[in-house]
Image (cartoon, rainbow, N blue to C red; front, side, top):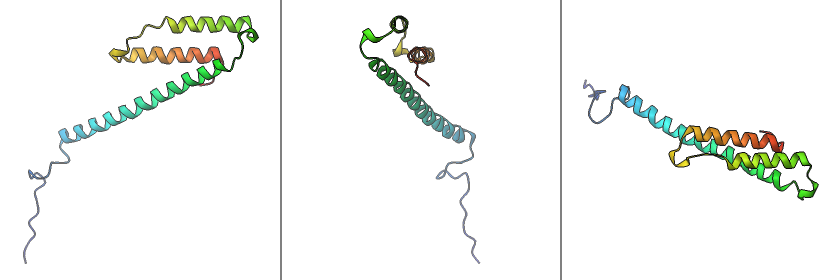
Length: 114
């Protein structure tokens, strides 16, 4: 009776699946994928909130129909948006937090829900 020649787990043809280095590489690729998906979803959510804020502003109608308080709120949020200091080319979390905060302030002034 002949025995089948089994390949060694450590043969050069087949990488060792349980190698710590291989496992780390696999997890890093998964982390990279998760980062792309998370960043994409986060940016999409922020863009949707900006679009909703723009739609809310368009729905105000003529300026003559707005209350003095609403006009002051609009002026204040406009100034806040204008004063933003961002360096998008650096890709910093700090800038994303500022943008997220500005959008939150915008929504609270415009009466939008998150």
